[in-house]
Amino acid sequence: MRKYILFSYFIYEVAILFTPSFARTEIDTTVTWTLKTGGAVYSSPTCDNGLVYIGSDDGTMYCLKGESGSIIWKFNTSGLIRCKPAIGDTIVYFESDDGYLYAVNKYSGAKIWNLDIGNHITRILPDPNTSFWDYMQSSPCIDSGVVYVGSGNGCLYAVHALSGAILWKATTNDIIRSSPCVYQQNVFVGSNDGYIYAFNKTNGSLVWKYDTQVNGYKRVTNSPRVSNGIVYCGSRSGYFHALDASTGTVLWRYYYSSNYPMIESSAIIVNGIVYVGSSDLKKVFSFNATNGSIQWSCAVSGDTWSSPFYEAGILYIGLASYGNFSTLNSGALLAIDASTGTITWRHNTGTTRFIGGVVSSPTVDHHMIYFGGMDSLVYAIPTMRTDGVPNGIEPLKTFHLKDNYPNPFNPATTIEYQVSVRSHVTLRIYDALGRELSILVDGIQKPGDYRVTLDGRHLSSGVYIARLMSGTSCETKTLVLIK
Image (cartoon, rainbow, N blue to C red; front, top):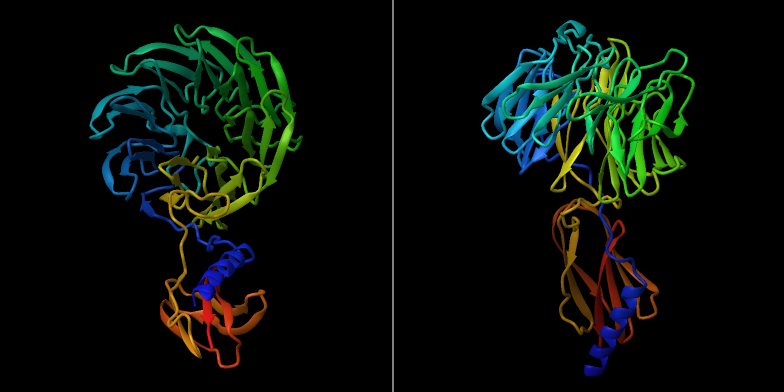
């Protein structure tokens, strides 16, 4: 008896080597929660201490509990909110289409101050089906107690974060929809006049400006990003630019296309690699940050106005589409393997008129992706590893193979197992050499407890393997027959 039992454990270990290891069960990108707002959500979320701040075309800034989506507070304005809020120690800052920059308490939503920085309301219609579809607002950024924000009057403002007093304003020749970026002593921003600007952050004096216009195509609507002394920024001239942050000198440029490609996506730079999307080309690109060589490009099925977010080797980016006023359009949130450019999964959003999908740039916090949809929803979806399993969540196990009894047995033994998710289940019996002898179960089974009898009257004494499988997941047990 002891000899057979010891041998059975040896066979069990050998069997494990030749059977598939536990792998994932396919898991849909199930939504953890959604919040219905009163308008399309162009705004990108900002997360802070478990709270999510995001605006909507209904004119409301929402503060939501990240784990549940419940509303902590909401602050109403008389214009559309299409920016990403900036978070200070106790204040959240955001712009509204009513022409004001707002500062409200980030815990209660109480207004602290608001500042008139130029009325935008004549540039956009209130109907989201007919509004100037590519109109976005400059998202404020905060640095050393100063809030920087662009405006529809063509000015870049520097505002005291606590009092709302204007410290200085610098003028460009057109609307500023680009969001400013601070690096060392300068603040960088794009303008609809086609220039990328560098202003001194202390007094607003012009340090340099760079003309992106080609063949009359202009507008810089995305936001400059700075890393290791290099400014990265796209434009509507067909180029993606890498400029020396001190002088504005071109270090390298990538020419997307002469067919008026719109680079609305703002880049991110991670470990010496630049990631950015291009709308009309319907691609996401990866560049070497130093020399601009392409690492990969990923073709997508829609426009990427959204900016990517990097988390644990995966890029998350929104996918949008647009058409005439009667066409239904939809989009998605994509997850792309950052090393290969392979789309690992997508989550489709609801349909809308004219513009559909995701213009909002996603944010990841505590293994949760937050973003807004043109279907008026705010979404929370768990992040996924490249193998499709949710981060921070144990893989879903569809079954459990229990011990059989009796064991050793003669002439029969009962095999018990439990199915927790409706799935296709097979239970096969193998001899010690791995040869399949019989199939006891093969079919779709509902959740529940199951028993199957193995009749060993036609088998010789020895060790046998029972293998329960569902998809590529399996469990095995050793069975010892003694006659």
